[in-house]
Amino acid sequence: MPTDESLLDKPAAPMGKGAYRAIFLSLIAGIAPLVFGFTLGFTSPADLAMESSKSSQVFDSSFSGCDTPPCGLKSSQTSTFGSMVNVGAMIGALVAAPLTDKIGRKGAILTSTAPWILAWFLIATGDSFGVLIVARIFTGIAVGIASMAVPTFIAEVAPTSIRGGLGAVNQFGVPLPTPRLATPRLATPHLPTPR
Image (tube, rainbow, N blue to C red; front, side):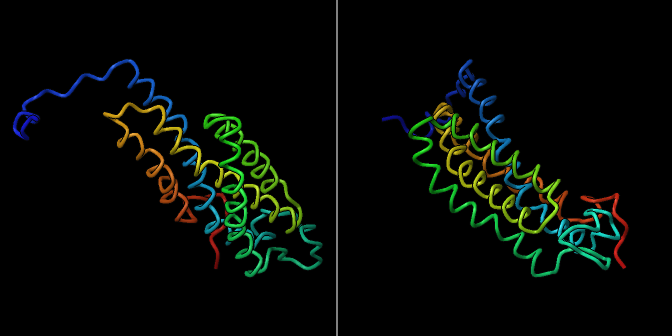
C-alpha cells in the first residue's frame, strides 16, 4: 500500500480523449440547470411587471378581462404563479425515474426540453391567469425531470478522476442566472421605474 508521500509525488494523469468528451457532454447537459435557475429566478422581477402590466405594457388591457387599467395580476396571483413550479416539480420528479428507465438519461434530458419550450411560449403569449398557472406547472415538470436526469447523466459519462468536478456543473448551473435576475432593473431594463 503506497504511503501518502508517494501519492503526492506522482504527476497527475493527463486527461484523455474520453475526459474531454465528458466535459463537453457535461457542459451541454448543464444547460438544463441554467434553465432551472432561470425558471426559479425570473419570478421575482417578473412579479413587479405582472402586477403593473398596463403601465409597462407586459400584458394587453384584455388580460384577465380587465376593464379599468392598470390591468395587472393581484399580489396573491403573482405569489401563486411563483409557487406553481413546485407543484410541477413534484410531478416531474415522479415521472423522471420511469422515464429515465425507459428512454435513458440523455433521452430524459431531451424530453425535459418539451415542457420548458411549451411553458415559456405560454408564459410569453398567455392572455389569462389560468394559462400562466398551467405554463408554470409545465416549467416545474421540466425542472423535476432535469433535476433527476442531469446529475445522473453527468456521473455516468464522467471518468472517475474528474467526476466530482463535473458533478459541480449541475450545482453551479442552478444559481448562475440569479444575480442577473435578482435586480429588476437589470432583468427588465425596458420597463419604466416603479414609483
